[in-house]
Length: 150
Image (cartoon, one colour):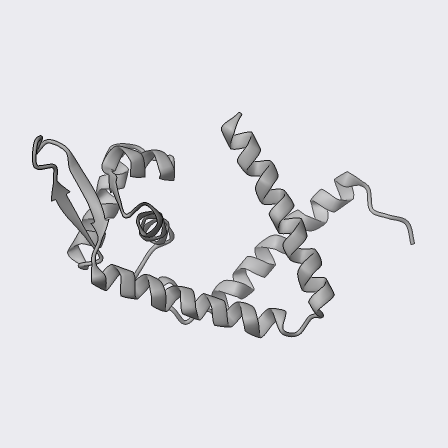
């Protein structure tokens, strides 16, 4: 059997990836997939976990949305008690967003559930296959990161 062409590879990826994502989502039992937290909200929670706090413009840039759209997403997170707004002491016009302990706990819960799901699925393939998969994903990540910086 011959190797698929790049075009055939692209077609197969386009076919299988939505199915894989749908099946991954179906396995999720977390707050994220019960409709309590949207994907953009999760992106913000993860971003704030790494950055500690952020200005609204930085969050909007990260999500690639307008500041108004980011504000709407953050408003819901504030309403649920997952993040808080902090006013800059020297310039109250500057508002920073920070995770609350409730937000951090939610993020930990979601990440633990995702971790267990990954263990359940990838425990069914060999260590060599897992290493190959991770190597390829890391390579794709490197390519995308390099292109983002260009």
